[in-house]
Structure formats: structure tokens, C-alpha cells
Image (cartoon, rainbow, N blue to C red):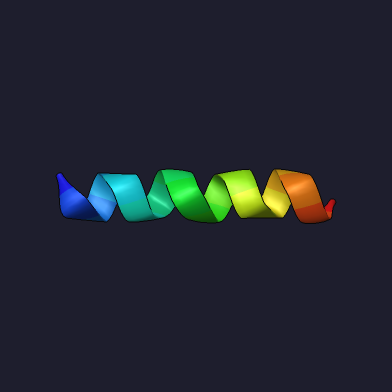
Length: 18
């Protein structure tokens, strides 16, 4: 579960940066 949250966080940051 922790890994999934990490992946989601990375995706969110990527979208914000993009």
C-alpha cells in the first residue's frame, strides 16, 4: 500500500511540474 501511495505522489508531482 505504501508503494502505491508513493507512485501516486510521484504522478501528482509530475502533473504539477508538467
